[in-house]
Image 1: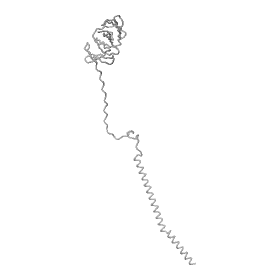
Image 2: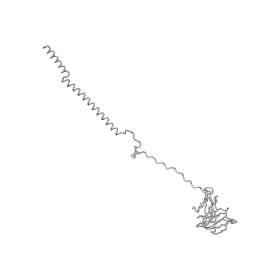
Image 3: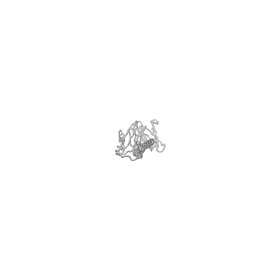
Image 4: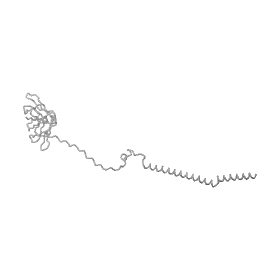
Length: 243
């Protein structure tokens, strides 16, 4: 009986010692402390990682705010949006385009002195189309122009005829005041009638009384080459002829 108690006591003591060794205060405290240290270290590491991640995100956001994520489009460029742009070097103004000199007026085909001392400058404008500028003392006095018919004028009792062939004939005096019938140079007869204000008609009659030509003023003088006899009828009814 005593041996059993001793054995049981020893067994219990051994068990108690084992339990004390395995779960004793010192080991338990050390284990708890070690575990707490590991957990704290892990928490600190996690906190540091979270902070680093947050700092990286903040830095990325700041960089994104400072630098556009994509290049500016053409519509956002200062030149088109109206914003001030960097001044460019001044470009010299282009020289004005050369202009073609105005063509000079055609020169007269000839000049001819007239009975009163004036000068006629004759220009060819086309087929049977001529112009005569009568110049006196350097000033243009009168102008005659053929347009499908001869031209004539009474220039202060100097009568001038310009033909469709560009010939010019002039003489002084010899006028007859119409209305009336008058004998003309070259055997012609002129029958002058008044038909309106500054309007006269002259029928040029041949040897047999036939009408070979008709002149009619319409507020301007007229002329005719009648087989080398030159006739002028003024808008005032004055008629003159010369051969």
